[in-house]
Image (cartoon, rainbow, N blue to C red; front, top):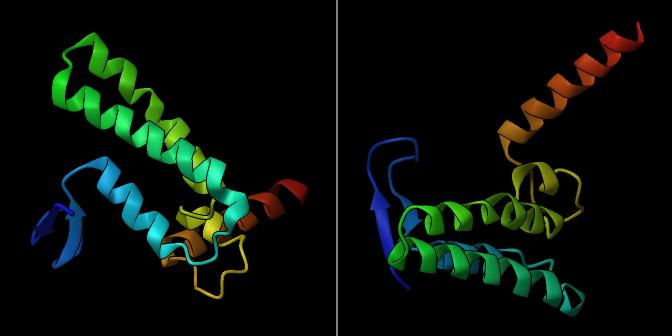
Length: 118
């Protein structure tokens, strides 16, 4: 698997960044130990989205790349449905903690909901 190590920028120092979206999706799926055979269709869909985006980025130009990048939100929604995004993990009983960012966002949403009802 192709991996790059980030030492600066938005990622934490030492965070493994993947060379392709397909590699990143594969690593994410591997880390989701709560998945079952019932998730195979969604897993295949996420892999297909990632592969299509990677192919367009590697070989396409202009409009072809733009079209492929429109698949990004669909791929993210598929991963979210599998519990592969911080907001979704907070709603699953995976035995793993949701990220601090998701917890802060949940608290903000709760405060906003409470203030609307007041």
